[in-house]
Structure formats: C-alpha cells, structure tokens
Length: 131
Image 1: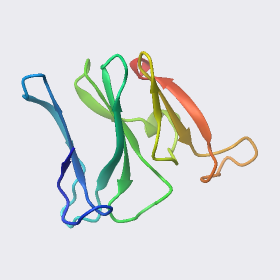
Image 2 (image 1 turned 30 degrees about the vertical axis):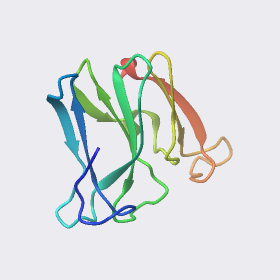
Image 3 (image 1 turned 90 degrees about the vertical axis):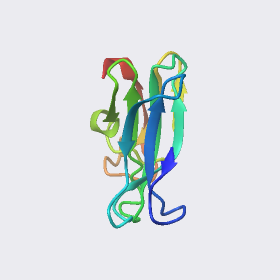
Image 4 (image 1 turned 90 degrees about the horizontal axis):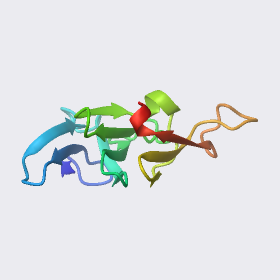
C-alpha cells in the first residue's frame, strides 16, 4: 500500500500496488480523491493461502458511512480488482479471515431477527475463485 492522501491516518487514502517477484508493477488501484476526503484507506489486508488473491478492507477517508468497511480483492488469474461487497453484502467489520485455498470470511450487515443490523451482523464465507 502506498499512502496517496493529503492527510495522516486515520484520514489517509491509499493506492494498492501488486508487483511481481522482480518488482514490476502488474496492477494498481488508486483510492485517492482530489480533495483528500472522498477516497478510501486500506486498514487490513492479506493474501489467500494459495497466493491467488489479495484481499483488503478499506474505510472512508472522510468519515462517511463509518459502519461500512468496503472489502476488495485482486485476482492474480484475471489481473483485476473487484469489490467483495457486491457479492456478499455490505461488510460491517474491518477484519476478516482467509482460509485455504481461497476462502474469505467477512462479517456483513444483518441478522436473522434484524436484516438492517449494522452492529452485530453475520459471517459469510466465499471461495474467491467462484467470483
């Protein structure tokens, strides 16, 4: 991660860079914004055990929707970034777990008794190679 924002943490913004073993840049995703308060900052990241996916959670640099920790992942095979929230729902906790070979576990909005719950939520597991 490279800091690209105008402000120090926790209001910083990030650029994610994926490099090969020789250091050559193969992909990047910039979460910076012109004013420094409309972007995202990476707060937690991990490679899956099979090394095919890089998963990371972000927070708003301007404090917008503080309950929502957008999760993204990079696919080595597809050489692109995608937002995990698009397939599992709004992620409400910054941390997540990765399990072999390519499973990510994240806490998303809602419980059985309250689908709008953004405090407790429920854990969803997803094989990233299916996305």
